[in-house]
Image (cartoon, rainbow, N blue to C red; front, side, top):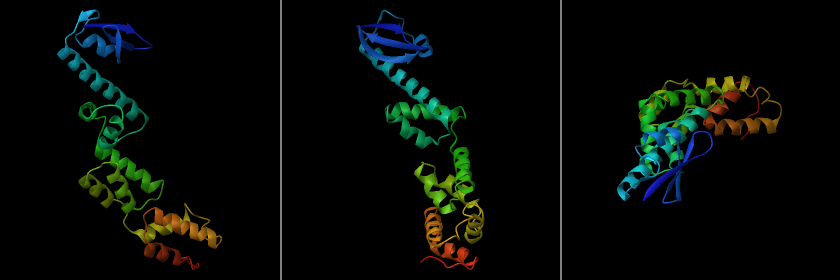
Length: 203
């Protein structure tokens, strides 16, 4: 079999085997892969080339994903597995972790802070969210235990700031009540917080 290459847009190289399109790789990978254009390649070499190219493409895709926003390891692997096999996804994420570009602890701390401060979620809801993103129990527990765990005071603060108009009418009070439930606060804590305002509490 003969491997050939044709330059594509930007830094892309289109690779062919016996005249049939095989895949597109980046320019750096092609010139460092050890195969020159128009040389013969056997079955074993072709398999190795495809595996190396897949890992490289997965790495490039992972770089693109984390350039848009930070990811945890498992979340990033799940996204990569939509286009690549387990080996390529695992290899890409492990390499990014070695480079310090993926860090579950850092990711979880920043996400927890955003959910707690900006969205007003409870530590319990944040715990579920972190676990759903593939963050380990150990990291999740350490981070959520460090959050403010005085729910009634927290809810009162939210009612006075984020939901300042909640007392307007019965419909608005009920809507606010349901929102706080979705944010992970339990019924008794919400009712206790609302009772501090001497307002009729929705059932």
